[in-house]
Length: 159
Image (cartoon, rainbow, N blue to C red; front, side, top):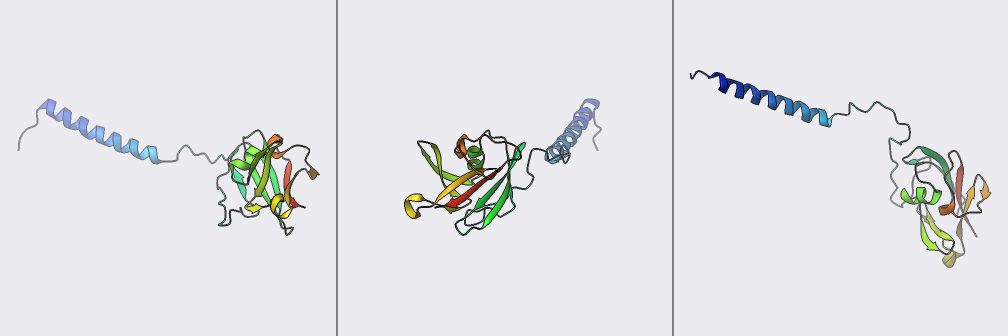
């Protein structure tokens, strides 16, 4: 067997140390040791929309430091409630971002036609989505209403 020269031995030891260091580094990159379990300001589990585009009653949606409640009453009178987390400044942006509402831009802001997968179109069946803030008919559109923590915003199909 060939005797290792001092310099050659140093190269091999450095190579082994480098390999061990790289392996440890790769393992550390994949760990979640920085997760201290603090979930303030975020929602850990994101609700998935059902096949019809609707979210399940009781879902927590979005992520952010501000939380509010949204209730939706459909054409049959069935009510669903959701907890929304957001950092958006207005209710319309918060709900559009998570896919809860959709509509068209009009002269007075966003004309909401679809809420939680249910469409109400005045041109088709003379129904529309009425927007309420803390139980009172809103005097502002959804996209002009600032998000206020703890408030209850509602959409109800009306004729």
